[in-house]
Every structure is written in structure tokens, then in C-alpha cells.
Length: 463
Ligand SMILES: Cc1ncc(COP(=O)(O)O)c(C=O)c1O
Image (cartoon, rainbow, N blue to C red; front, side, top):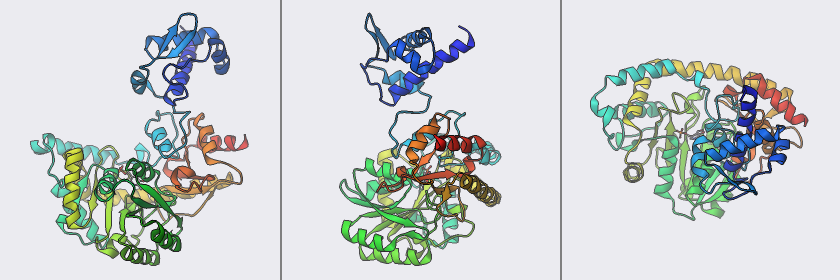
């Protein structure tokens, strides 16, 4: 087989795999006929025969004599390992952006993803921290960690919290495997199925996915440039009686907005009057040029739980998060962490993060990231505006621009269209409980520099 034939055969195989992965073809379904699929793919029937034979050899499909090819009953197992292409047929739901981005091959461009490009991350410092750790005590390299996690990292975190005006004692902090695990543990600890949880509209899409897994009801409140709409917040709390409110105060995901002091004060009063607990997910805090008001600082960690993580600033691979909360809650949260994960972050990860926070490196690294992001925000906003795509707000920091499409465009349709051009977008409604953001897209400015992205968008908007 020559190279060209091999590429065509590979494309047919990938298309069939994508249909099975996206559940457009299920176990036992008949594959398109050779002739029809050859026409769909623009290849010869012989190429489709070769592709189907190869998929049959892999066990993904079976030939039935005289009647064509069928998806094998056990197709899911080898497929999960072989699947590489974009999930073209999947519904555009809260998992869509995560799955497209996490599973993307290196040739994909990902303006919709939620992290910095690998070459923005501090690899030299990470390698240095790894070398230091290679000489660490044997226990760190081979044992389970203590239940609260690395004392060195907890000490550094307490110090950093104090700088943000949050006074916490050593009994009020625990490490977690990630920010996501922190939210999950809090949900396990405080919620029962059927409870109601309040989130912002729009909010980080994985809050929706995680809360669905906890079988709770969702209520939402519109987000404004200075925080949640307070009147709507008060009315929704009175009507729906949520147990928890989960939010980001600084550089809110996806809008990039920051809570104003007045709104913070009023939210805390409403929370106190209604016995509402607030989870302040502060994962983007270090991207702020100046610290903004923290609910956790104003409240003193009474009814506010503060969580954070280093996935966005240092590494999403050396993953580590934390919870700061009431002393009497930390103990229950640790029990849950033991029950469900037998511990928090890997001690190796926690010690590496501690090593990178300990000197002057982190401050300089974040200053550089903030400078770079400010430039990227301006550049990308300008280029989007030439396409008629307008930022809802120019954030003070961070990497998101929450943007409105010009009249009539549906962001999910656009996202599906540009996926074929190897571009992953983040369509507005994945962030919206009320499905009121069909014409919004979230752009990660650090991932939006490649001119191919704007060209693909412009093409899709002309169609
Ligand atoms: C607001 C918010 N919280 C939490 C996370 C996940 O953080 P982690 O990697 O620590 O689980 C993200 C990631 O995008 C996020 O945007």
C-alpha cells in the first residue's frame, strides 16, 4: 500500500471509530454500505473495503457473509484505547469542552480549553523541583502521605492565605488531589441527593457536571460584571433554599469578572440570614493584578469554604489543591478523603509544589504570566472584534474573554463546524444552567494566538 492509500484508509477507519465513540453507531448496528461510505468519504470502494477489513481485524466490527459489516458487541473495549479523533458526534453538553480538550491530539488548536499552553508553564522550575525531590527522604517517594498533606505546603498556604487577609489556623487547612476533588469532597460532606445548589449563570461548566453526579438540583443566578445579581440571588435563595452556593470571586470563570466589595457584603448577609454555605473557588486568584475582596476573608471562614489549586499556575500534571474551612468541618472532610481516595495529593506532588512556592521564583513567574496575559487579552480581543465578536467585559486579569457572537450565530453550531478544522471552542450554553448563552463563546487568550483559529472562525461564520 502506498502512503496516499494508507492515509485514505486511515481516514475511513478514524471516521468509523468516531461514529462508534460518539454513539452514532452502537453494538450490532450495520455499517454504511461500502459504496455509500466511499461516496461520503470521497474515496474508492476498495479503500473502504481495506478500512473495514482492518477494523474487523482489530475486533471493532464483524463481517457477516452476504450482509455487510456490523459493530461488534465488544467494540467498546479496544475502541477506548484506540480512539484518538475528535468526538464529532457528541452532544454539546458540560462535558463537551473538557473531553474535546483533554483528548485532543497535538495538532488541535484549543482556544476553548481552560489551561495555559505547555510552553507557558515553568518547566525549568518543575524539573529543578523534581531533581530536588529525587534526593528526598524515602518516605516521600514511597509512602502514603499524612491525612492533611505535606506540612511544608500547608505552612506556605497558611502564610499566603494570611497575605489575602484570611486568618486560618493549621487545623483549618487540608490538601486535596485537585481543586475538583476539593469541590467533590465538600459536596459529599454537605449535600444529600435532592438538595439544591446555587451556581452562577454562567459558571464553570464542570460545576454543572459534578453537581449532576451528586444528584442535586441546580438553581442559578445571573452573573453581572460585579458579581451575581444580588436581587436575583436573594429571591432565589428565599424560593429554592439552596444548601450551598459555589462561585469564583476573583476572575470568575467564564466571564473574567470580579466580585465588588458591596456585592460581597450583601451576599454574606443573605447567606447568614439563610444558613447558606458558600464555596469560594479561588483557583485564578494569583492571576489578579491586585487582590480583590475575598468572601472567605470578610467572613473569617465561618460559612465560606475557600478552595484553590495550582493546575493553572504551576502544573496540571503535578496536581494539588487545598481546602480552608471551619476546623470542625476539616475533620469530616479528611474522613471522606480517606474513605474515597485513601488520601489527598501524592506526597511527591505536594512537596514539588511546596518547593516551587518556597523561594522568590513563584512571584516572578506569576508577574511574567500576568504581563504576557495582559498582552494576549488585548491582541485577541482586537482580532475577535474584527470578526464582530465582542468581549462582554475586559477582565482585569486571567486568561478568559467571554464574548458575544454577532446576531444570529449559534455558538454550539459554530463549535461543531470548526472542530473539522481542528479547532476546539467553548460554546456559551455549556456554562449556562438556564441555557441563556447560546450566542456566547469563552476564549482562552493564551491558546488563541494561532491565525488559523480566526481564519477557521471567519470561514465558519460565512457559511
Ligand atoms: C473555576 C475552576 N475550578 C476548578 C478547576 C479545576 O481545577 P483542578 O485542576 O485543580 O481540579 C478549574 C479548571 O478549569 C476551574 O476553572
